[in-house]
Length: 100
Image 1 (spheres, rainbow, N blue to C red):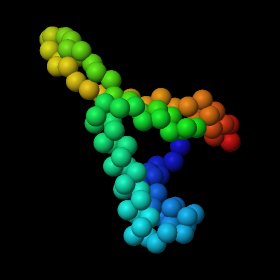
Image 2: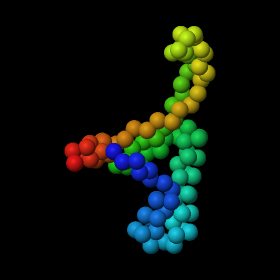
Image 3: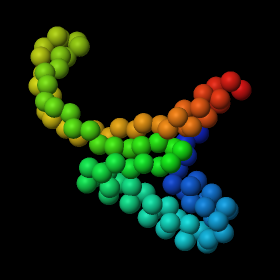
Image 4: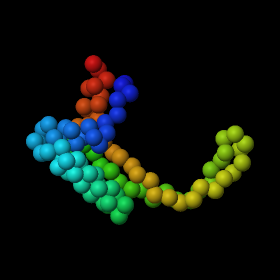
């Protein structure tokens, strides 16, 4: 595995090269898409990107956890968590990358 991280700048640069928009327009497009995705998730909507995967928000109930060092019980409050389920095509692409 590499230590490379794909950033917003990398995405906007790819849009600039592939689509031919200006750098500013490419950056605005990437920001707009990411804003739409995050707004939908904040509302509790599911975001499905074909051949990539599905982002969704899951409600987790309150529960009692345990401090691993002391063994003391600690209450964990209810919360919302973000989940991602890759599509079968994405799983196959990632698995194929392991065989190189």
